[in-house]
Length: 108
Image (cartoon, rainbow, N blue to C red; front, side, top):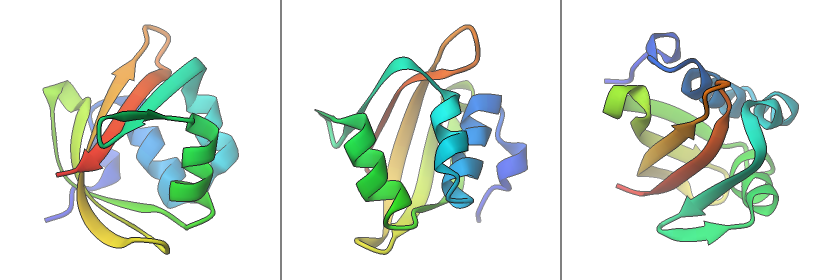
């Protein structure tokens, strides 16, 4: 059962999912704190390269199954035109100003 994006608890996480699903790269970048970092399957990656390849050029989409850790962790069926659909986990560090300073993803 997919959660409605509008029901996600943390505004920055809700906006992250919305901008991914709407293929809104500009809106996505506004959500990130200066110097934001990310990791995929436990390895730090170049943020700009990764989001272009795994989200925006490949039309990524997030179907959220559940949230935990006060809304800062998601279990997601993620799909894009490169890899198809896979079950993934996402965790977010949200700064005091409401922007995402780090996110981590990987297969669940």
